Amino acid sequence: MRQAHPPLSKRRAFKSWRTSLFIPSYRVFRAGAVVSISALLAACAALPTNGPTAGQITHAVTQRDNGLGMALVDISAPMISRLAEDSRLANKHVATLANLGGGGLALGNDVVGPGDILSIAVYEVGVGLFGGMTPTGDSLYPAARGEEFAAVPVDRNGAIKLPYIGELTVTGRTPAEIAHMIERGYAGRSQSPQALVLLKKNMSNTVYVTGDVRKPGRIELSLRGERLLSAIAEAGGTVSQTQDMVVRVTRDGEVVEERLDRIRAGAANDIVLHANDVVELIKEPQTYTVFGAVTKVTQVPFDQTELTLAEAIARAGGPNDALANPKAIFLFRYVRPLDGSEAKPTIYRLNLMQPQSYFLSQKFVMQDKDVLYISNANINRASKFVGILNQLFSPFITARALSQ
Image (cartoon, rainbow, N blue to C red; front, side):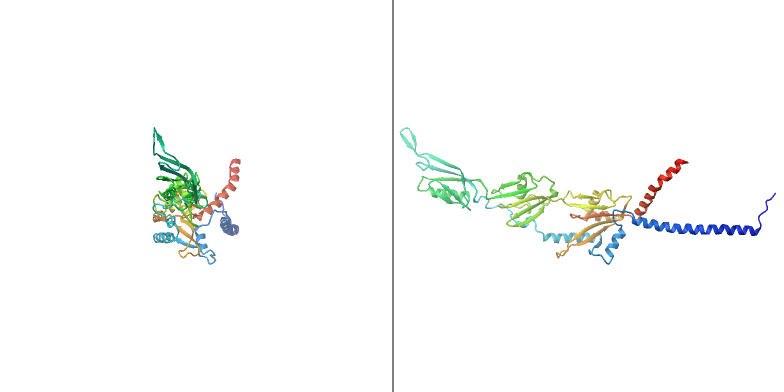
């Protein structure tokens, strides 16, 4: 038997009642969804992060209150060429060890001065001051004799004293010249005197090597002309890597520095040392700092003479696939203009999603104390927020599943 339908008036009344329940519920749901999305966005913005996004960096540069005067520059082939030329021009005005001169053999390293110790030998023939005739049977035959003065100091006035001559001023003279002076002093007192003078201890022609070396101290100079690298080697060499060392040479009040790994044996900057030069080795490693979406925020040493941006990114572990925005690799650097004015903060940008960027990064040279920043992707904040929600609610979900 067919069931009778309710009257039309009752069906319309039920539909109206159902609509009255559904529409407000939908409106409440929609309003709640809007509020939830707004809350989600606000929560994402409030989440902690390890650095700005690419958009935030761009906005900071372009806004009017850019107090530091930051500039944003995209890395390109013309820009790299311009940087290389600016670096070349800037280095022309930087003093190097080659500017101290001193090429070729060093003259005057055997000139005697106060504090030196001389070894003097005087030889005579026949009857002399320091010997007589040698008897042989019934006859006397002349014989050659020598008298040695093993250590004759040069006093503060630059003079020495010898028997039968007295005081001789020898400062500023070579051993050969001093020998002639002694021979003239003994002439008339001795028969055919001959003198031999050696510089036994050279205190007035020395350099001092100090700093980060194994055997710091004084090094005597010879007529060979000791060069910078040979003096460092004689001091035992550096205890650190050459890339981390700076050589500072002080000569006549002038101080010049240059990195040790840039000095080549026999080159112009491998200078011939002069008396009283002071050579100091200082450990100053070149480093750059890495921030942002990387595995670890760290300070990375160069460990080589020249480091490119490609090598720097690789040493930092590269962009983190889960966090980084490979389109926005930034390098922060203070750039000093050629006119010598105040250095300007400059941000260089590289897009690793473009194939040509991998060639450009091999030509871009890093500088000491550069800051490499790999920006975060925008999606990271939403991912973080979802992750936090999962951590908060997963215990309740798990407990509910276990209770069933």
